[in-house]
Amino acid sequence: MQVFYSDSEQQTVVLGERLARELPARGVVLLIGELGAGKTTLAKGLVSGFGAAPPEEVASPTFTLVHEYGVRPRVYHVDLYRIERADELESVGLDELLERDALMLVEWGEKFPGFWPQNRVEIHVRRLTDDRREIRVIRR
Image (cartoon, rainbow, N blue to C red; front, side, top):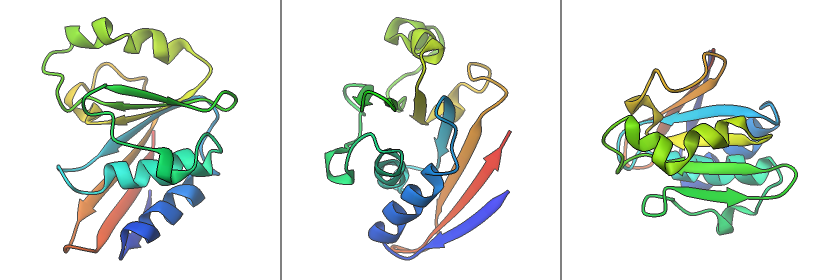
């Protein structure tokens, strides 16, 4: 497990860019944390660091559920905040996305722990103060 601290949104984006260099080109990264913890901010850095889009083009997919960035590499940014039941995951097409040659960043994925592959990365974002975040990276 790796533990990092960030004192601003910009530092969180930069940390995401740095962490992206250590991620595989294909797989699942669960972004775990309470509402407003900074998951989407970290996702901006991860997508940017992966070379799929600049941070200013990355937005929360809360209402669309999935945003797609890049071609090769390709990143899917998924937000399951509004999904209530596991059977809804298939109707959204997440089972198909898992089969693609892409990296999938998933916010609120911890709601459905049995759906994700065992071999994944979990990034826990915890708000310590209004500006300070603790970011823990766990590779499973």
